[in-house]
Image (cartoon, rainbow, N blue to C red; front, side, top):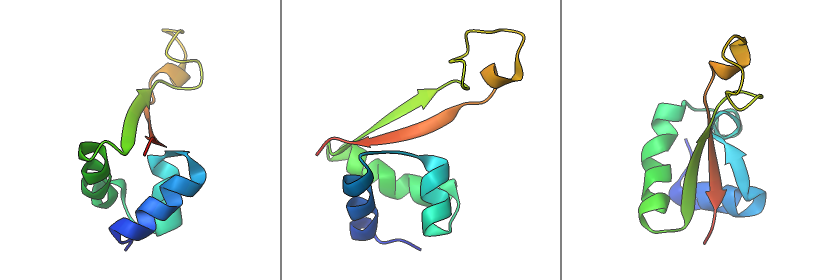
Length: 76
């Protein structure tokens, strides 16, 4: 499990990262990481973005519009 400082260092280095990438890197679930990420958001150091699939949700009939991806951007 990652510490807040390990998470901060990774986010500062990567700048923009998906929740899935964080989960793989830190070998934990998104649900475990989200409270720590929320702390950096509250401090104004991190921004959370949610996007649709690869088409950005523009196609109503394709499966790529169904999946949501969560991204975090280090702003501090």
